[in-house]
Amino acid sequence: MEQEHIVKSFDEDLNNIENLIIEMGGLVEKQISDAATALTRRDVELADAVIAADKRIDSLEAEIDVAVVHILAKRQPMAQDLRAVVVAPKIGSNLERIGDYSKNIAKRTSVLAKAQRIGSATSTIQRMCEMVQHMVKDVLDAYVSRNQEQASDVRLRDEDVDQMHNTLFRELLTYMMEDPRAITPCMHLLFIAKNVERMGDHTTSIAEQVHYMVSGEIFDEERPKSDATSTTFIEPDAAE
Amino acid sequence: MEQEHIVKSFDEDLNNIENLIIEMGGLVEKQISDAATALTRRDVELADAVIAADKRIDSLEAEIDVAVVHILAKRQPMAQDLRAVVVAPKIGSNLERIGDYSKNIAKRTSVLAKAQRIGSATSTIQRMCEMVQHMVKDVLDAYVSRNQEQASDVRLRDEDVDQMHNTLFRELLTYMMEDPRAITPCMHLLFIAKNVERMGDHTTSIAEQVHYMVSGEIFDEERPKSDATSTTFIEPDAAE
Image (cartoon, rainbow over all chains, first blue to last red; front, top):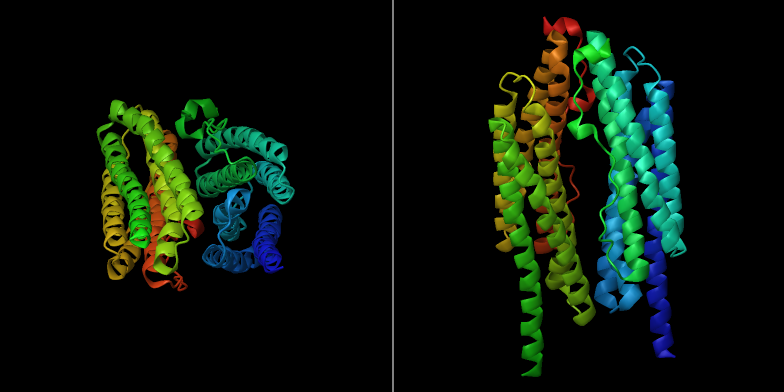
């Protein structure tokens, strides 16, 4: 009886952590979507709301960390239970970073709203954000349902985000070469595109945590990384 | 006697984790320094060595995570001991990110080595890297000696890195406006400068972990953030 009571309480504690992660994930999804909408519509008010909403995400991360220390101090979880506890702060930290990148996009939106529009860059960024937002949704579904296959699938989808980033990167560089007035806005768009690419990386990192939680094995294959922007070189002639 | 044996073994396990973090920190310091030297001297061979050396840092992070799960499964650490265990994966993850940023600088070095030199940008980046490298060294000293004051000090020094980043950012934008051939190299230098600024952030995050480990309190004051580049707008006229 006593034993059963302890077991039940552990599950409650673990559920609490899981709920915090789900709440955090829901907010982060909304932040990605709102940041992208604010950017596309030049909606500075919505961008400010994204900046303000980041605080709640930060405090959820802290709540997860506290709950993890609490559960470890009170119980001695083993095997998959222990793994479910130790991945929680990592997933929390990845979600916090994705939230932070959304906030950064929102910060740059107020500057971009005053500048000339750069081709279809913001639509491309919006599409990249939608892809990442769905990846976040799916990886959290995989986390809740302990679905390793779904987690692997999310991990592979990051390549599409990288490819879009590569294309947009080259496009923005050529715009900069064509018109000096495009330099400041393009530069902010380059950083935003990089932020979205990084969001994708953090989502795949959550997928790897889910894989570890379910299987007990650390993902050791190299992730298919297709971000080629670090070594891209474009000459002004190419812009002609 | 048996009790003493258990206590001693826990200390050994914890020492093992601490040693992994120290080893990782030493390698990361070297990576920052080598990445900066490679960039300044246009030494592509050294840059390639930095890229190759990142693997060892990644596997040290994985080793720390495994050791943490192991110690939690075997023992039931309490209070400061438990905190020392739970901060380890976070510190490991911060160090891994700093290592990753060094690798990214090294990747861009092979491109920059072929391009025109941009003013004194690489010297400024080298100075920023030296500051961050010393911060990493000091925060790991604070970690080993459980010195809260030293950790706080490191956290505050990040403001200087941010200030240098702001200045360099404006400088690079004006170079881009003056000469389209400077756009690609300046863009890589902007991303490198941002990487170094982020390294500083991760170092302050380690400082916050040390603070928590020693005191049991989470740092809740906002960090003095002085990175103003997200909202910087420069018109081509300003470049004249």
